[in-house]
Length: 204
Image 1 (cartoon, rainbow, N blue to C red):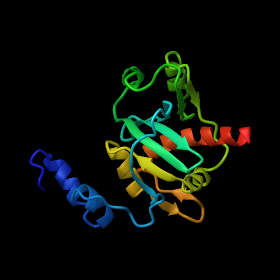
Image 2: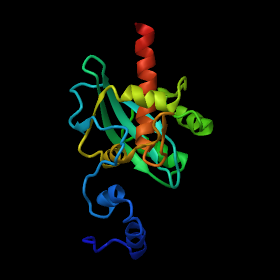
Image 3: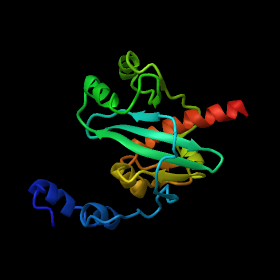
C-alpha cells in the first residue's frame, strides 16, 4: 500500500491473498514472517567465514521458477551452513545464465547443479570445469531433515533465501514431503550439501 510504483494488477493479486496471513504479512505488509510449520527455523543473518572457498549450488528454472545460484560453506565441526544469494532470476537462457555466473564463479570452482537438465549442464560445463550434477541417493525430505541438524547463516543481501526459509513448509511432515514453491535457492543449497556431506562420510 505504501509502494507508489506497485502495478495495479500486482496489488490486486497480493490483496487477493489476505486469507493467508503468513504470506500476506511478508508480501502485503512488508514484514518478516515465518510460516507455521516452517521446515527451517534455526537460521540467522551473519557473515561468511574468512577465507572460505568458493563453492556453489545451482538450481535451474525459467518461469515461474527462477535460476538460483547460491554460494555455500560448511562448518562441519560447529554444525553450521553458510549461504549467500548470488543469482535468483527468471527468463534466462543458458548464455545469459553463464554470463551472470561468471560474475561469481571461477571456472574451476565447485558448482553442484541439479541433474534434471542435462543439456544445460553440458553447455555450462564447457566453461565451468568444476560443475558437476548432483547424485540423488535419498529423498528430498531425508536430506532436508539432515540440514535441520545445522544452524543456517545467511548474508544480509540474501533476500530471496530469507523469504524461502520463512515460507518453506511441509505438505506431509510424516512422509517428508515439502510444499513446492519456496524452494529454489534451498534446492540449490541442498544439492551442494548432498555432495559435501557424502564426501565427508566417504572420508570417515
